[in-house]
Image (cartoon, rainbow, N blue to C red; front, side, top):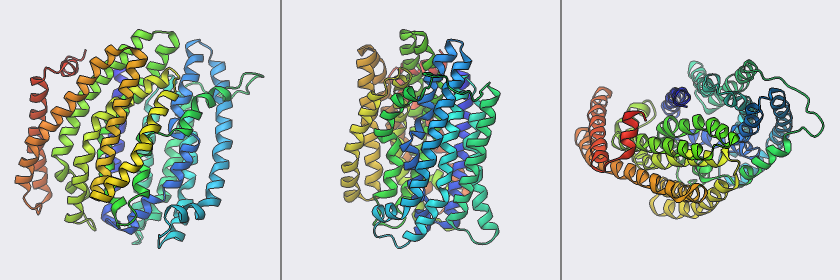
Length: 504
């Protein structure tokens, strides 16, 4: 599992780096403006389409189905199960894409009733809608590869997707007409090549063949049993990104500020938390299929503890290095020093969610591997309901900082809710093992922030420094936060620190 985690983490890291380059290009060409807000808002309807068919969870729903057949050595049954699910999902996503296309004007006017660019936003939404078709169907091909413990080809999908968006932006720059539409065209091209065509080829290489399901052999019912809870109960972890596109409508660039900050925070979240969850899931599903309950619990707990330690270290580093990172990544062209100050403040708030992401990504997949879909869905839905008024109240009181703070509080509460649920499912001892690791990560990150932030601010002054100086500040701040985090962890006798350092 360690090798798989490294492959996935490496892919996510490269993808996030490309994603930051993509965002930096967007910031340099469009700045923090209404144009940039339109770009981010154009993805709302396509993302809703993705959620309606549980597109974000297709690998989660399909891997356990395929894993059962593969563990039994019946490849033919696995191919028939895949074929039945693929046909069903393909028809559903095509029909919903057409429906979204038709309803786009009404939905845009409902969500953004005061938008002065409603007609253009409708056109941009329709332009990028086909990308979700390729993303959804491609996720099915990825599930086949994950089931066979093949991670390399799926790992290339986000890289190509981001390269497509970047290429679209560069085309706009080349023709001296940089506008969001070029980025959106690149997204569609990247989704087709990286998420659909390449994944079809990768799945074929693992032995996938389309086989007509025999009578009574369809896996659609089993798929729906697993997928419906995810369709109707999207969690706060999934919908977090969508809220910032809808709620902060009064302030121009509020969506842009929050999205830039969140995307930067998602780099360590993707590399550490999401990579750990993706890599662990097929192994957990296989353990469940073999009935290895105790081994499954121990594997989840050990992976979660190690992930929490590394996630806390990442949180400490990002909190301390928020100002240098934002200026080095976004501080070009139309993106001003004032914009950088706002975004860096939001990054420092969002960064405290990294340990929570690390924990819930693994605990949620533990339940999914056992086909207990409703447990994380119900917990996630409860916290989503809580999140909406929290966002509105804190956003109204504190502005964009309130939205970031609301996300941090709710994601953390959601992770603790998942921990409690895991305790009821696997025994209270797992809570006594994992809860201290979670709080140690937060305390150590907070201590590192108290030590490192004043140092970085003193070195940066008003922020009127060159990139080379920012690099120097980042180096000093990074080493300081690392030393402070490790020192605090050692002082608290961190078990997970020993596990990571000894590779146990």
